[in-house]
Length: 157
Image 1 (cartoon, rainbow, N blue to C red):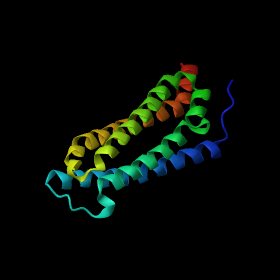
Image 2 (cartoon, rainbow, N blue to C red; image 1 turned 90 degrees about the vertical axis):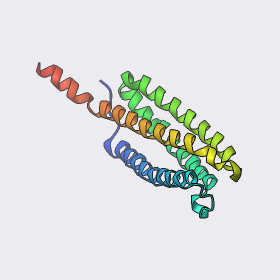
Image 3 (tube, one colour; image 1 turned 135 degrees about the horizontal axis):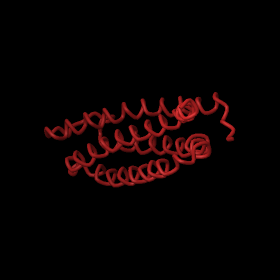
């Protein structure tokens, strides 16, 4: 029988991760708006909507967010208590590395204003990947928290 992590610690971390998701959502909406502007030829953007500024903020925030998720207190707890979920955790960690690498490449392009239009397609691809990743994380957590239901159903049958 495994010993569950005390609720306040794990749930506190879940709350922090959820708050980070909301903050990231704001940055992603700004990036999407920037892509809209670039598509119609608008390159005279306010500083806070410039691709390099937004991508730098996204890279920083995602780096911290992914570190929090990959910590022993988050994915580590899930893997320890539900080893069957480890393949999903490994996939999510792989997504983390791939997305950070993608942002690093986008930052190189964002450094050259004459290349900003080149950012539209890969930035939108990144946004879709992040949304799909968030859904995969939600499913993993749903499986994690639903683990007791499976045991109860099996016992009741």
